[in-house]
Image (cartoon, rainbow, N blue to C red; front, side):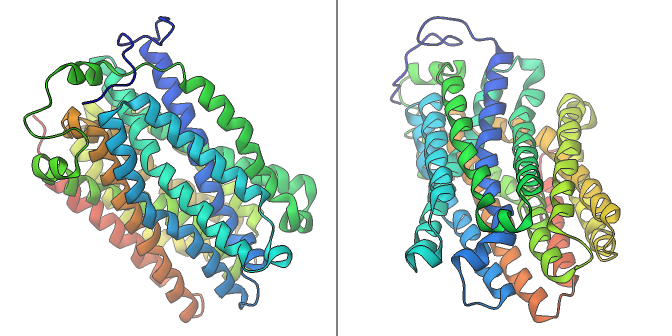
Length: 437
């Protein structure tokens, strides 16, 4: 195992001690910035990118084309998971997290500065997709690394709560993305927002990334990583090796992929698809209504994830996963029936109540998942599991589902089926988890 940073565990290069609380905060904020960047494309693609970068299509097909650009990130995300996971297990968590954050920031600011199809022709959508690919690479290594850093620095009795901090960061990222869109939209008006106002949240990323890099530069390597790096190469194979991961942790990998499909589908497919679905098939609702719902939902998620992270061990981690999957199944039909009323309050209730299943899951699973993998392949294992589930829940399920919605004249039934299947995957994965004593 190669170590680039030989700082004493718990200290930065300058020798200044970092408390576990500070490390947890750095992991949470860095992840919030990264998810802000990543999810921003998903939200804006659903309403803006079609006519600007994919003109000439019927509006719904243009939206699907823009969302296909959104989906390519999920196809490349497993590659990012392998690349950054291997880096994190071989060279250290700290430099890997810095690299993923910088890459994400460059891609996001690039999107904010990108000329449209009207200005540069076909180069515009091509470069847009390439920048989205870079985002997918970056996010493949971000959240897993933040979880591993937080858990490996955590006091033993607070591992679950510390593992929940990056997930809280995810929710803060969604909150920031929704709030920035809403604020800019209201400040400049709908027409200006559709013309150039949408660029402002992307450009804001540059400021956020600088802040995140300064914060993360103060991180030290985790004590567990430093201890592992001091040993002779593990008998199970080279650290960060995909072959080693598949040999020593195949079952945890499969189980983790299954349990994440439900929450990922909610976060990426349900929330982002709502903008496209409402824009086309619910004229009584506006994009602003959905943006307000995103802010409210993210606020609920922050509270639920924190509560679950603090009390999830007492509830039972396996039980929480199973309940989360069952709640996703049970809410699939009522959620879209509420949305179908075209009342803003009903829309917000559909989003916020659905978020509870995601929130209780996010409070307990990050630490549990991290602890399921040996330290030599922990970063890689967590990264690959989440990337694979994100590919299913963020691309393979929503794209054909949205196409089916269009083919059937806006019927929400395909969306209900999608949510039900994702919840079933989480429930099955929860049942495969070992029983807790």
